[in-house]
Image (cartoon, rainbow, N blue to C red; front, side, top):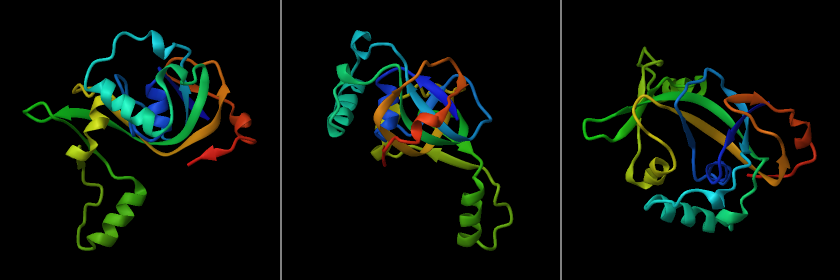
Length: 183
């Protein structure tokens, strides 16, 4: 299984479903299962967090019953499905958005919803409504970067120790066999 290493608290934000996009400076063509690995870097030794990120972070961690200084490190904390990699653009006012091509399942749904339409592969645009503004706080949405869309996130009941790496790396998921998952 492919894996990606993230610093805490971002790995746990994905694991608890508070962050659905991982923003990166580089693109990937890989789609499929992915393990979310929390780097060894101690989240309590991070520089002072800025508002409003700190408030949003504390709200999400509190909802999940977690504390910043007790987040697991050096471990796989969740699994997910990487469904697409989107290039980030910006409106004239600086508001980020991205264009994307629908997945096969989305094309089938478009075909059902709009049977007369011919081009089901037409580019779609994704903007963030006010209700999803926390997502923008939890990533670097600078135009030219990439938003990796994650779905089917499953939090591991107990983190699995693993040595991380930069970029995408291969992880042997044999340790998942006996691992109960939270959904």
